[in-house]
Image (tube, rainbow, N blue to C red; front, side, top):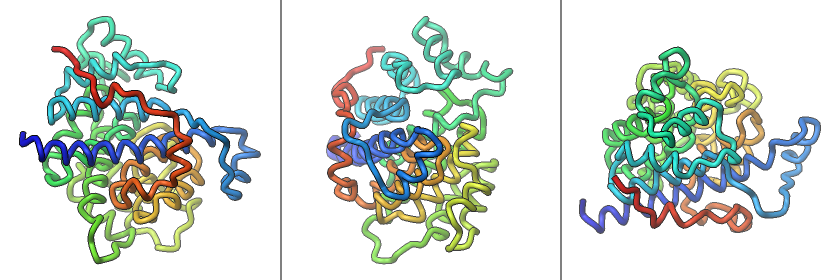
Length: 309
């Protein structure tokens, strides 16, 4: 791969990681008492720093690390990176605890991932939450985005819905980058319509289509009632709502994140997805500076680590 091209791609991926990690940490702040959270969101009240990130960011850093090293998703290396940096304090789900523990014990990642849930594999939102930087990296080639997103998913999430969710988020990130300098303002429906041809047939795709067809005046409460908000932790319950939010405020990072968190549900993950997409349209300068400073400092390993064969 041409070094200059790779550096350009890596810069895009790192920008997406910045948006994803700030969104993740922001959303994580609002896992508080139900009788308090709504008022804080209405008042746009934010706690003091630091804002810790979660497994969404930790796994996205592995994506960036492997793309930096190889220029593509080298699955064995990515599986090793996921396992090496696994920290149960970051909020990983039970299924991922089992998979990453198995990888650390020398078991084959493909067998571990496929064995989940009676052999159907996981359709959780974990593959989608971490994939936006991949979409940024390959943003100039949508067919490669689709292929590489699927490869990144199946290390932990082999179900068709999880793969479709990862592809949908990665393609949204790529499209956000492609549209960043457009003189034409794209509304929510137009942006979502651009994603549909790349998403495999699935409930995820069906719900993205429903998101596209919603009234421009649809409320977040209505969107949650139709699309979900990640409370079920599945790709099909998470990705369509996150894409609806990203498409609603593609040109405004702060508004996109406040809209997303107001839907509650799996708010660190929906905000991570939205942040990783929208930043590719707004640029990192679109992230409020005080938010970036408040987010826990990212470790250096994502930017300098090498995973041995």
